[in-house]
Image (tube, rainbow, N blue to C red):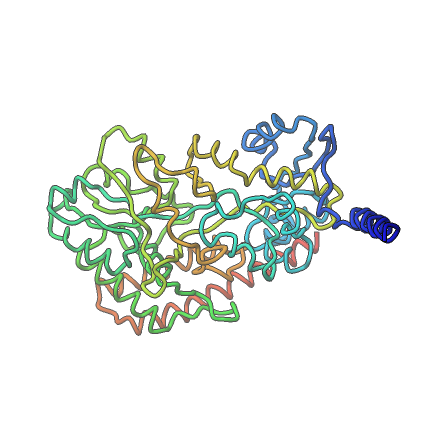
Length: 463
């Protein structure tokens, strides 16, 4: 019996050793004792890169070197070559082959689906990197382009809220807004200020951050998850019952002085937009829909006003979601990068608790996607910025409009909308007529923009 016992013990030892030999290989090997590495990083500008991330990262990892590839020349290349932003961006990636890729949502989807990004899931599991601390729904949203796999992380996001002048509500004995109101509910609340004051001292209940009537319509559309293009992303689909209803709501709000809007006239090219903070602080505006960047203006204003904020308007059919929340910079690792471990250490650092904490201390409008580090600003709870799940990687309303003509087309389209809203407000044109006109003329503007781009591309090819 004793020999058999020894054999069994020997067999267990052999199995144990073999188990060690065939242990699962780590997703990424460690950097090594000296922590050395060199990575290429795609970023807006080299100096901004170091002030935003590079310097603090190097304080922790002094032996990792960076080579920063600036994306700023892309605009110049677009003009020279008659190309789109995405085309020039992807060309830059192909030429320089960065290890860490700063990418917008459009290119992120394309690169992820083409298999050009490294799947982060295995190394996240290996390093026990915490994904639970992110804005609810954010990680799920980032997984969509990868078919469930995670190919990038976003350290910051932006969204809008409804800022309100608490003193103005108290003075007129009106209940202030609450979280998760729909825009029709906000307009109903806003209507209680109609008729207060007169002339230059008229008090308005609500305004968009910049106060243009088309923005009010688009804000309503975003809160109701409306789309501008058809399902194929080819044509404007405006002649619908939902858009007609949005036109009616917007027109009635303008007619009844429920909202403040700038005069209904076309915007000149290069129009400088000014926020409505002055009206807000002068007690002429009770509520203002604006982004997190607006907090900076409100905090530094010389006139003290008891202001606060609640969530942006929601779609009653999905009150837990926001059509205003989006991410603009996603950080990914190239699938063919030879420096994946060093690249991952940097991406992990940018998206980790330490950086989120640092960003929250020097708040400049960008919101950390980690929810535990931006609890309050000047004693005001930041919960309204974090309580709603983002609907999509980018604002859904304009989805499908390529960046090469978005700015030019959007200005022309906005002027078309302003012209038709003026017809409704001042001349009684029906929503049916306006919706049909916007769809017909809008598609003509869209086709014109596409033809201009084709011509620019053709001319660039002849050089």
